[in-house]
Image 1 (cartoon, helix red, strand yellow):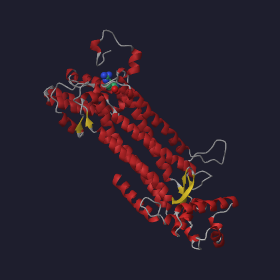
Image 2 (spheres, rainbow, N blue to C red; image 1 turned 135 degrees about the vertical axis):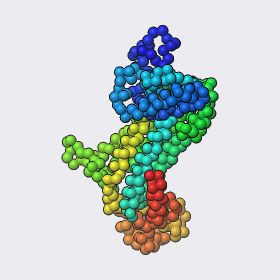
Image 3 (cartoon, rainbow, N blue to C red; image 1 turned 180 degrees about the vertical axis):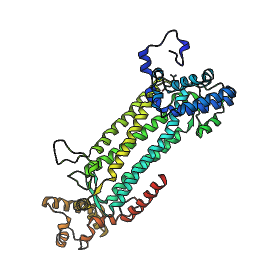
Length: 462
Ligand code: ARG
């Protein structure tokens, strides 16, 4: 059994160790990137005078035939493929099988150490935009919900205790803001990926006069790497991708947590579509938010992949070590999990129904205390004093099981001479949100313009 490195060794390697070290089962995903990189490499070494035009043409032709088999599962399941160490060995073996000696010249001046970095970069260049489109779709779904919410009100929460009234639209747009940062973070990852590692050789560079700038151009990279030692042994772009994916999953998980709470019997502000819920095999009344719980649960895996990967990297000497092969399963699992979760959440969000009567009535009551204090401030009372006055009023109301709405003008006056009859219309959820002034606030006109801006963002990113 010949390997890409058999010459140095006397006997065959241990079969179980070969299996242990093989990455073909998973790096097969890099197949088309590997072949495209090899076609460009063949052109580059031909231009550098390493390959004859005839060999160059034969190699490129054979690689095109190999590329045409991308969707052919049987091609990857042959008996020979079972012994291939990785996707690079697989492609090279198939090439040699087609063009013999010419194929054996392709690897001149090139190492798998740079090839695997190239493949991963090409892979991320085509896959990250797909994740960004899925993120945009989910943002679109949340923007639709925000739009559909109209003037509906709900309480906002800090410490999971009622804080102040907000528009339901403002709640949905809060999650939109986080997902838009995720989208931008993925663009930053793409920028980091955008460097051609070829020309680095195994570690020291290559002795052949390769025009790496032309090669970068040909493969769609805007820059070349700065240092061959660094380039062959670093995977910071993988770490950055995993971080971007993990943080996105954290955001999805928090959306899920909110939706699980707000669709529960206890809150009841939102309702899940029947199609987005599951029942219980025992309790007939149950409408469980399984997909949301699963996304929340799966966020753990992606965070785990990020931490695990950073631990793998931290002890490595500079230059390539086989430990780096662990990058691929981490990356692929994070990618798959994020994609699946974005799709699931998109479906759930599109089916959400807003129960504005319930959310609106929860937005009334003692959570208007800050507005009462602001009222006193408007009458000239210093805020700290106003806070005291309202605090003691709240204490009294809690003890009596009452709220601001039940106070008569006489009750108000008895508590502080600054309260006049106009306090009643000041202290409502609708006037509370309407009084907000800053662009990021829950004021209806601010939310309306945030909604318009978000809608434009979705259109320009779809
Ligand atoms: N399968 C290897 C990886 O994923 C490719 C590079 C192998 N290089 C080497 N010198 N063994 O990292």
